Image (cartoon, rainbow, N blue to C red):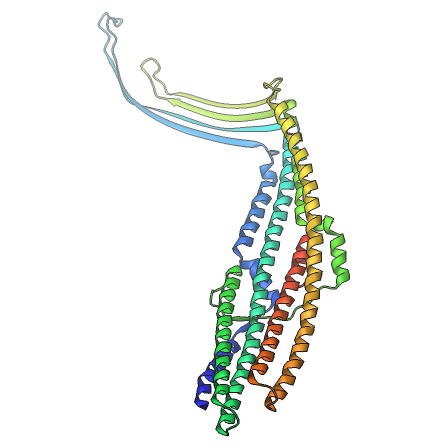
Length: 450
């Protein structure tokens, strides 16, 4: 009968060995890998670089434009000139004149510079608008990173929870395996029936199936985590199951500073500033534009001898010019006026949106705080529940070994302990995730140790 225990023991040893080879992936390390490798974060950082390039003085319109041009032309002619009816001095008809390989070259080069001296301050406000757009893109990238970190730790803590559940189920399997051995020994000595052995085997089978299912779930979630940190999908690792909660006073201090740090509220401030500059940029259309221009050119024309100009004709010219322009669109059909009015309406809409977002953030903060405190209380209750069920299980184990309770009663005590331990694991990570969600709303998610 004891041969039935051997396959289960071999499975148990194999599972233990497979996890022994995994490296520890700490919370700090997984954050570093995500910041370096996560695709969404990389895209967000590239968007910030684009906004950084856009706010450069090279994109401001404050610098002059300089245009250079050059050209060359070569021409060769073979010509015959007739003079019908014309006579020489001696009265003889004038002979035709032939001109072969008559070459002409023309060269030119020039530089033109233009500079807008004044455009109604449109460039200035647009330049400031681009700076605000850059700050907005930084906030958007920060929001992407915060969301990624929340998603990252949601998966990381799920790996931790399943890891702890796996350990609990391994212990349950080991206890059930020991029950089979005890039942087989007792059966050999006539102290119980074969029914006790069959019951123990059923429990071992159920514990083995639960353990295998948990291991499969754990492997799947680990692959999810490897996707987030852009690592090999089957990269083996273990995670840190130790959880530290932030002191309550510190959390309350973070909540008090939400208006200064919440990324959604900060984005509304930047959008308000952008809309304000949009109004000023459109108002610049009421003012004139003053520009300066200058040019320098060189031309060389070298013409071949002709029938009437037998010598080579060379014309070498250099020119330099300066100029100023003033353009004032006195009436553009009302287009500028419409754009200014629309920009003001957009600014008012942004103010309304800010009020709405502020109200929603305050609501989300209160809800998140309540959820966090509730889950902390549940976790503390579950911790005490584990202690109670552990004591009950130890007592039941003693009574079972003394033959005072049945295997069914012992199994129930074991299941109660198993459920209490897995519920405690779930409550622990649910509470930590609720804390992280609260920290995200306060704008402190990236400023704390995980």
